[in-house]
Image (cartoon, rainbow, N blue to C red):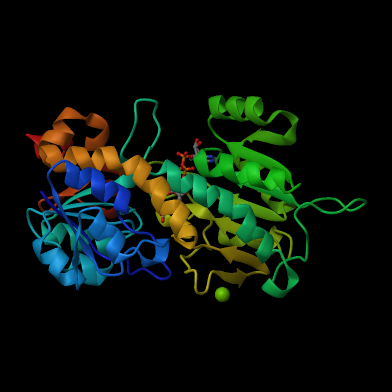
Length: 371
Ligand SMILES: NC(=O)C1=CN([C@@H]2O[C@H](COP(=O)(O)OP(=O)(O)OC[C@H]3O[C@@H](n4cnc5c(N)ncnc54)[C@H](O)[C@@H]3O)[C@@H](O)[C@H]2O)C=CC1
Ligand SMILES: CC(=O)C(=O)O
Ligand SMILES: [Mg+2]
């Protein structure tokens, strides 16, 4: 199969779909890989590294979109990219379609077969291709939130861990999945007073066992979510209903009840965010203030630590990329229902129920797409 990797073009996005290590594995299986020149610059991998791994370097993204049978990326295709996708081509990347009507319409119009990293599943009910980036974004959340808490950045002027004689900041994490667990771990490590809210009691039990008395857990009723958010110095939004738009848990009229200078890090922004006032921002301009509350809503947080992120992502995607290349998407998905769960769009139809529901498309059942 001819596999193409364009350079990412989203704001400050330096990750790349395939590392040279992955290229070597894929070419060893007899496939051809074409990489846009400079695609690996942001992770410290040169064109020469890719050539040594067996890839061919191509001058422009348009040549890659025109010829590749499978396009492997990191971020959802931007307009100029999805306009170049075509019928019969396979796209393997993050998509986050439910909150993104334009991209969904673009993919549907293109005829492409699109498999989204974030809805591929595993046998334990996890999301193995989202998890590595959730680990990164979760660990980054207290870091970026700590910076936003500084006075010059609009924050309350608080140190997360406090100092002897002065209490630490209160960090509330809504959603105790992969992002939430990693955010709690780093926030607690920085000395903050951390509470995690979730609606899954088994998850709260696991977190209680994992962290012991270093953090508090709370069942996420409307009442308790509200009360903890009003008391917080920093809130991390980390909920997910797979494939669906994030539920709005804190509304516009509640914001003024939060402490002035408190900080929201809405990691769930790639699925639309769990605060009504969240709107996606970029690494170039990551924060804005509403009602004296600083909002950090960067939808591609792991792009900031592109090297760590790309290697972590490739560790998880490589077996699936190989299966798709070796078998073709249909056979690979017929053989592996967890990979099939990643299919979001095929030949002009939406194949993922939560995306169809969110955006008003007729849903093409998976078994029809795979027959
Ligand atoms: N902004 C960025 O750069 C990145 C964003 N993300 C996003 O972060 C979000 C979280 O991802 P993961 O932690 O991997 O998901 P996950 O599935 O591991 O965890 C989500 C948790 O939210 C809980 N939850 C669902 N509804 C809830 C509610 N109403 N109240 C409280 N808890 C609730 C679930 O029980 C689950 O434990 C996703 O939207 C993901 O796409 C992930 C990586 C990077
Ligand atoms: C998951 C995601 O949105 C990211 O890694 O950018
Ligand atoms: Mg700003």
